Length: 318
Image 1 (cartoon, rainbow, N blue to C red):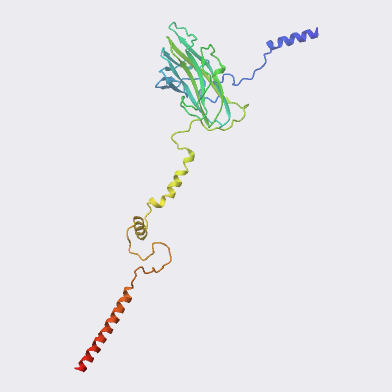
Image 2: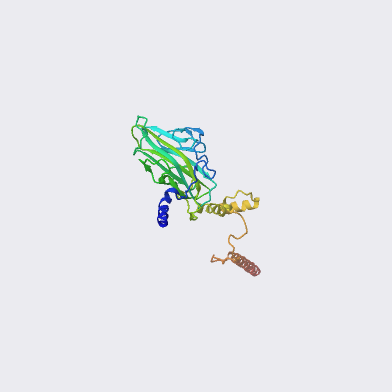
């Protein structure tokens, strides 16, 4: 009998005492103080060119022109929800928030806990439709362009009845900077009727059970900064060419000497052009004109004396 009672108790225990399941996010995490999102409950906020958007959130539109509104008809908590819609015109749009104070290479996880994508064909009845989709993404470097290749997108969720915590709208990622930008995206491929998307209960927290990620460079080189390998080359080149184009005033002597040498202007100077020993050049003419002139003078004097002697001799005979 005792064994029978023990077996019956073991069979009923799961129903009477449900096993506690550890959750990735605390209950009512949109309002929880540990939530890394600012205004995760989508409380009303500010006007934008696209319409009214929840405080701390920014709208983005990739295609189409949906209208953004804050509403309290489809929501999870008392603060309402973010809503955007379009009548029959396709769109690809959503909201994003940049979260600061992150640790690079540490894992974080986030989700949009309450989301609906429905089509109202005109009978005020919101229906699941294959033209309606939702998606979440993150730029782990903190960029705010949803079309950037740095953005990591989760799987697109189309034609789904899931409105509460669908696993496709939860993501874990490794931060690559001290900030990351989270995107909540709604897509409408086109159909007759009003396409509607609601977002509420955005939650984000660190994932301490995940190991530290290996650092990797961004997939997109920031612009317009020059590549790091070229940065030190340019100053070195300028320094090496400095003496040629320097604007530092030189002394008059240095300026004249440099100018004449550089422009090859003839300058009367006794300074040798090349640093070589002084060598007397060998005569290249076949006759030494100085010695020749002296010889002619001596010869003329001798002929003069001969002429005078001859004259005296002839005069004495006369």
